[in-house]
Image (cartoon, one colour):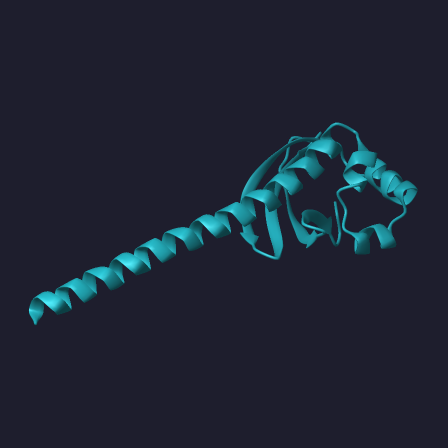
Length: 128
């Protein structure tokens, strides 16, 4: 009887461990894609490519900002010289916390909100 109980306990613990591993991998995969989208957006801003950055905005945000309005707004912001990811979370929507380093050399914290649109992560809300 104790052997049967022991086998059941081992199987349950093993199943929970394997399930937890695959859950972790699924979440990490989802957040990695969101992180990549946010990094692409910021890299485009660093490269002064507002057109490419605009293409990474979600449809709601593009509806609030024309390409020209977005480009003019970016031009008024301090130039980003570097960035650092400080955290990512989410599955169907995500937030990416970044430290942005403008010309001044100080680090400004910014939270990018992302949503999935047509299978791709897009920056939504207040872009920068």
